[in-house]
Image (cartoon, rainbow, N blue to C red):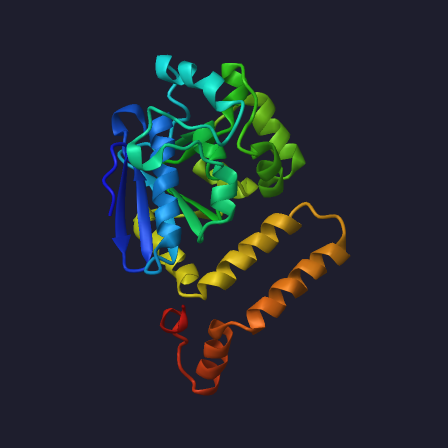
Length: 272
């Protein structure tokens, strides 16, 4: 497994745990961290032994947003024009500006384990995840307005879908911070875990990882494409196209055989 400078990776059976590892800065995002995250997720997606991923933070923070400083200010002009430019300062194994939202929505299932402050980019990076779990010390904020910028990473799309238009407007126009209980009540997080957040997130991720890998990706694709689709006919066409694919897969045949034989299907056994 690749060694990184600002994240940690550890595999628990079929779940990969990725940990932001800048605890002295509350895991504030840097360009290097972004490159390493993109590289680790891409490697995990290509690894047949991994079925799902969990992301958390080291220490008492999840991710306190972008690291506002000289390094970050110097990156802004480079980052805005394109998502395909090379980054000469990134590690040799990951010199790329990642299309983060596209990467997450095309990825194996992703679970966030929010163990502390998730502010600005620390929140917008996980809004496209498949499940957001939080511990009691989680604090979340779409705080862009407070630093004189606007929402990014499609957060003005995903946040209203999670919490509704009114709550999203309030969060983005005020920049206020909400605690874990309020975040759960408004749907900003999906689950609140009092103790052992990371093991609970790994257990949740495993309920996704045990299913057929190509079908998981197709489900995510359907959710992504149909989230804002106004035509129910188009929604059903996409579903039927995916269903036709699914019927032809060895995973589907394994599921049918397992049902008839009264056993648990083993999708990894039949995967190409």
